[in-house]
Image (tube, rainbow, N blue to C red):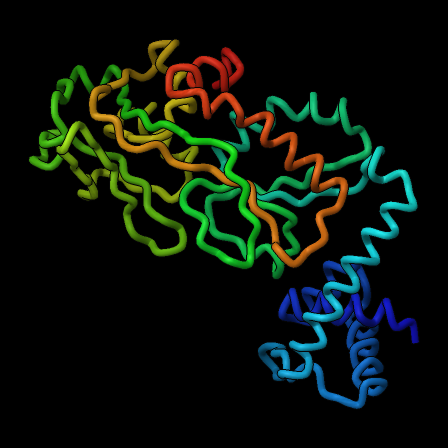
Amino acid sequence: MDQITAMRVFARVVEAGSFTRAADQLQMPKPSVTKLVQRLEARLKVKLLQRTTRRVTVTPEGAAYYQRTARVLAELEEIESDLTQERTNPRGCVRVDVGSVVANLILMPRLPAFYKRYPQVQIALGVSDRPVHLVGEAVDCVIRGGAMTDQSLVARRIAQMAFTTVASPAYLAQHGTPANPQELLDGRHAMANYFSAASGRIVPAVYVRGDQRFEIAAQGPISVNESTAHLNAALTGLGLVQTFGPIVQPHIDTGALVEVLADWAPPPMPFHVAYPANRHVSAKLRVFVDWVVEVFKPYNAGRAAAASMALPRGTT
């Protein structure tokens, strides 16, 4: 038995939580995965995994074995990288998960420049606003807005994204322009809301000026859990939308959207690129993370600078 291969297969089963998912990620037949783990258990004379019809759980002995072998496998990967040209010529596929608006309007317009710099790195871009389990779904990194509280991840802050409230000219012609967030609470205006894909709850739109603060979570005519649809709700006149300023700036420039409540600025949202803390950072992942930091750098320059610098002019 190839012990290193067996260790790698066992680690993937633990991370994926399933023999089937591990086999898919390793591109191996499921019986081969099962047999390698069984042989490893026989060699060690200990039960590493508890198998039921629904799931696989790690025994205390298996958890201890995984923690120690994960470090060994990471060290082996680093040694192999040092002995190849991967560090100076990274190659392979990086699996990334990112929200739809950030993917379409920020990353994808700049990917040709990335490929020119790193022609042998491929990006598998998972586009969604739902939470993902990086290890279980074999995702290398995520780009997300908001506070990062998961201690199993290394989170690198890449931006502070300012918010802007917008509406279509048609909506404002029919309903007027709000002068104060109180009008949203009074029902004189409709909010097109964004709700969390994880909790199903509406994410309040926050408005701050001095010591005044409003949180608007009233149910409007539509609520969505995906950022591109949220933007389209504003473009189609379904109500006021509070979203990231650089995302809507091109539409403000063309007149498709109008900014309102500009003097009620909520706190900006931090953005992070995050990856598992216990996983070796490969050369391909390292260059991608460094590139993401470059791409998002303009968003740290303040609201006006980010709006003018961050998105390619004419992006829609």
